[in-house]
Length: 282
Image (tube, rainbow, N blue to C red; front, side, top):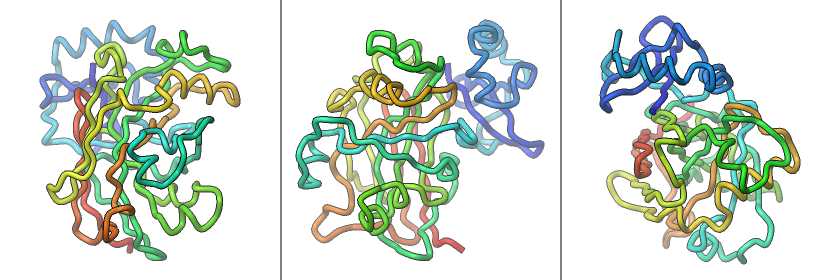
């Protein structure tokens, strides 16, 4: 099942995407995606019934898609998690998982413009598969981890490189407003199946920059949930960026940072596409 947040003039709504071109509102069940996720065991059957019936379906072209989770409690991202990205960064394969946070205010709609900040213009793209936590918990084992993932979506871990490396901590350079577009919707884990067999690609103005597969993750999704849950309680709706492959603009010769008018398209097999034009912050 594919679940989206959208608006059509009366505030945010939650809906089930059907036929790839329509969305069925689920207002009778939830008005917020986190609530839907938290109560999924109770509302899954009715959600499936409403989606199958298609009652009240609206064309996707007539709505504005929003980030699937509006303000997640936590947004974590793992660095250096594809071998080719590690190599291009000139770093060694980490023995431990390298984590940083993105501010929840960086989370952004899948097709809305992304800002090039006033204070610096070294903005880069990073296509990533994003995992959405369903069942919360702490000290989650790798064996149990699949049961704790609600679903997946496409993400772009937009990064301001100068601010990323101005201090040993990457959080500021990863947390600018609008620098965490995700979507276009959440594809539930049961529909995705194995998340470690998905091709992912990134294009800038139609030019392919990144092309890999989630089978190349150094630390897979289950390892990631296990590690994070050793330190904190994961909660429904938490967002986890699972790593980017090689091909970032910062390592090109010469470096190719994003400029006004550039269009960045991120796509992942079975999860969909997000695309945004980059515009100066006003």
